[in-house]
Image (cartoon, rainbow, N blue to C red; front, side, top):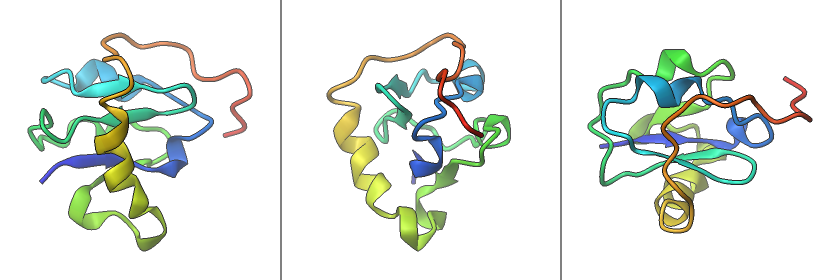
Length: 94
């Protein structure tokens, strides 16, 4: 099992979750974050830190966000690891 960042993060890109991750499994995309399913230890520390409730255990991802399970795995191959908290996107409407 792993945790998954869903589309609720798209356009926000809050990084509060990054600072509590003990295994440095978050990657930074242009408009959202992704979790490396190979590195995630399933601790759940990131879930309460997300102000938009975008992170789910893979088996609990709502049906409308299921495509993000695969997207997270694909995007960690294309995006850099993020280790520090940054400001959310300027156009964040949430």
